[in-house]
Structure formats: structure tokens, C-alpha cells
Image (cartoon, rainbow, N blue to C red; front, side, top):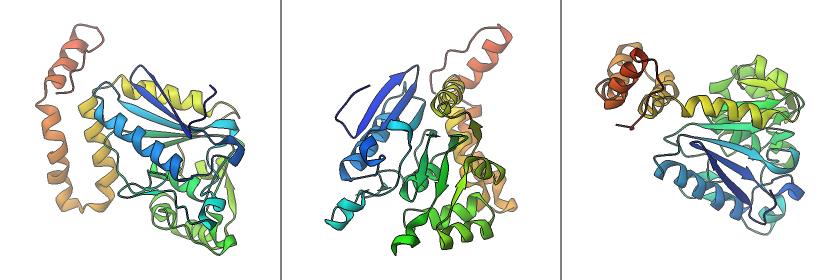
Length: 256
């Protein structure tokens, strides 16, 4: 797909695909890209027919981070309330999958780990090398990574700026799947299609519980979980799911 837009949107069967489209700059984020990502997330959340998003990059790489030329000239790829590239400070209400080919570095890695799931090619590289440029990973890497991998490994990445392979990231539990080079988008789409086929209320509530559970004490977990799950169990979709199972047919979700 050829386009001059910094972000390309495609929709198919409830899945919104968001392609970062600055391949000549290795999809480095500028303000226009950040605005495009933020607008795409708005579209994802406002359209009830959209169930899940996949974020990928054009030209064989995911995102190399902030556009340093723009940074030097005073342009920052941040959106108020959304963070770097319009994503890293926002908890979307629907799941987002990152499909990583090539490099996910600096802000690009911070974008990826802001997503709910990550699928990566076997030759992909991850890292937060900001310290090599006298900067720091200020788009969430320094506080998200210790939550998503062992603290000492996160410390090493933050202080050395070294990269890790997709296989190493998988071993650490940072990413969900490693696939052959060139196959990350297809694998992410397969995952997204499975999610889109499930009950939308159940998916949204389950996602919120999983993403917040580590911050709950065991004493409060059941009560807080119930705040999300009680509406699911009393929904029309719950009845429809059980009925469809008994009738051996695909459910027809209403989202209520």
C-alpha cells in the first residue's frame, strides 16, 4: 500500500491495522505520526464494530524511536494525555497487538511494550539505547520494563543501552510469539482474528483485570475483579454465548 500519510489505517473483520509509515526514517516518530496514532486509537474505541488493533511498521522495521532531527528543531512527538507517539501514556479500552519486524528501539520499544501483546520476527531487535545519546527512556521504558521482565535485566538494558534479540525477549516473557522473519504481521493478525471472534464485553473486562491485577492485594482482588466481571456475567452476550454453544453455532455478539 502506497501512501504519503505517516499512519495508514486498514479495517477488516473487526480488526483495525495501524501501519507506521515513515520507512525512509525507519518509522521514527514525529508529531504527525503521533497525531495519526492517537486518531487511530480514537477510531478503535469509538467504533463498536472494531474489536482489536494491530500496530506494525512499513519497510521491514517497527519503529526506531523519536525523530532526532525533529527533536533538535524543537518538535516533540507527544500528544497530551496519550504520550509518546500518541500511545505510551494511554490505556486503550480494546486490545492492541504490536507486530514487530526489524527494530523496536527507544520510543519504538516503549510503543511495543505499551501494547497488550507483542509478536516479533526472529531477527527483530529490542532496546532502549537513549543513554548512548545522553537521553533516558522517558516514554515508559524505565517503569514498564521492570513490570514485564526481571528488574535486573531491565536495569541492564536501561544503563547499557544494549539490544536484545526477539528470542531473548521471548525467554524473558516480554513478547508472546517469535515467528520467521516477515511473518510477524500475519501472526499478529491471526491472534487479532481470534480475539475479535470472542465476546467484546468479556474481552474488554478480562483485559482490564489482567492489566491491573498485579497492583491489587489478594484481599482486594476479588472485589475489584467483580467490578469488571459482574456486568459481563449479567449481559445479553453471556446468554448468547451459552445459547450458541448449546445450539452448536457461532455466537452473534451485541456488546451488551
